[in-house]
Image 1 (cartoon, helix red, strand yellow):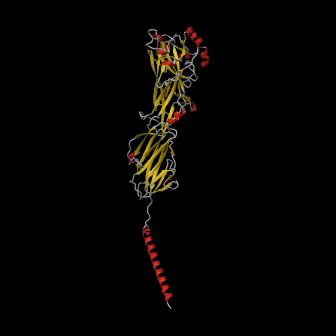
Image 2: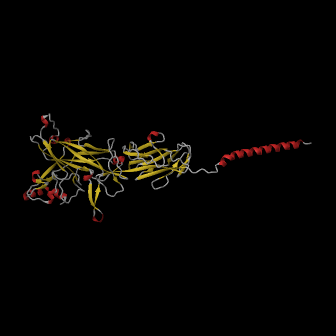
Image 3: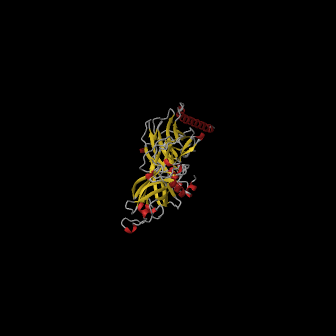
Length: 499
């Protein structure tokens, strides 16, 4: 049965159901308060309703990572309804294990627009009387490391995620009378009847906010609905909340009523904007079902800078100072990552770090020895959990009295051009004492990238004695020539004086 048809004939259906006292497959799959992701609560004038949000985590090698630093923004408004907006349900006493008893009569309940004054949430803006603002934050200084999916693995583990929620507070007495004041008897009059009140929760997080945190939009629904179930309190002088349902729909103000041909892909009861309700089973290859995750995703990558020393005259015990610079023009949310300096084959301590608000980070062992960034033969620095779009630039200083030839290669063994002093950038450069070898350009981190810096010194020629003797020979030869010229000049003068 199509939903539009069901709306138009809903009252007729309910009447027929009541008269026939039969249960249909369609009626059994309607939105019942105590089934699926619906919640029955102890009747009270107030209720705290939790709306969940998940982000699936990824790392190039499946390392544990920090969450992105992002705050999602939501608007809560009254959902427009009309006379046809009704819910087909059953009384709790007519249900057994969530299924209508034989002969149970369904109830058609009208849905009312939610009274926005009854809703409160952190971040409410007094200038927008018809909108309540709410938010869910991730990351930050209180974050802990989380398990991440390996990006090379085909199957996604939906449990490797981060979760948070926002709490929406609802006051049934403000539904009863928006101006209700417990200390003012004049406001304790009924304005709205008991029943179901509907609100729309819209995710208004901008694309710029997602990009700034390096988060990928998974394509899930941007809005869900909240139905709050109310009834008279014991004294009949106000309303109590006895249940609520979160659901999503493929149309803006539709009823929660749907038949058993409707899938969770288009509408159904949910727990929020989370993996549980943003997961779909779709038809895959050869008729096999595949699970698709529409949750937002956070992809992170790793980088490694490794040191090698080559040549029989090179000092393999020396530790060369390094500087590592990271940059990410898109990420401006101070996202956290970790780094580790491994010396002499021993694993160093994982150290917390974060990209600054402008997306940059520097660890400078050249000007600050306390950083510990001095690398020798087979030493390395490993950076874990860098957001997508991060680039790296590495500089090494030759703090010895020798001239080294420096070169660098990437993960694919391709040369990385270096520059030193005023010489043009090249695959290998001569680095004088106290000079630096610097990458000519930033390098994109896309996966797990390893940049290996190699310093080499070739053997000295054994004919080096020639360079010590030649200057003396030249000077001696010049002296001999001078003596010959003086003698020859004197002899010529004596010859001229003969008469």
